[in-house]
Amino acid sequence: MDVEIYREKVIKFVDSVIRPNLATWEESGSYPLELHALAAKENILSLGQNPEDEFHDDLACRKVLIEELSRSGSQAMVMALASHFVSLNAFKTTLPQTYTCL
Image (cartoon, rainbow, N blue to C red; front, side, top):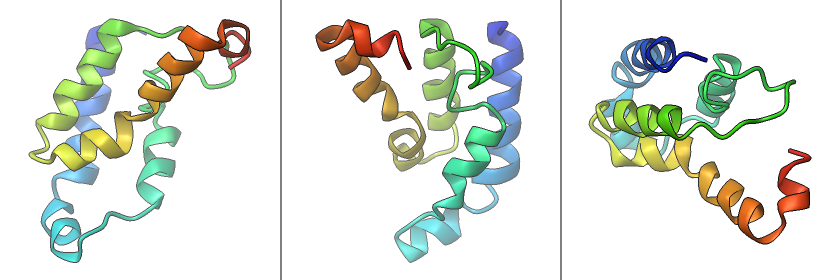
C-alpha cells in the first residue's frame, strides 16, 4: 500500500475511534478489546495490506502507524496496536521459516 494512503487511513482511525474515546478509556484504566478488531477490520494492524495475502513488513508503514498512534496523545495506544511487530521481528530473526508462513 502507498505510504500516504496508509497514513490517511490511520489518521482517520485515530481521529474517529481513538481520540473521541481516549479520555474515557484512560479514566477507566482500560480500552475495549474490540479496539483490536476494529483496527484489524480497517487493515491498520496489517500495515494496510490484505491479511489474506503474504505479509510483507513495510518499515515506512510501520513508522507511520507509530507516528499517528502517538499523535492520539496516548503511548498506551501505540503499545496496544503496534506491539505485535516486536513478536514478528523475533520470529523473523530466530525462526525465519516460521515468519515466511505468517
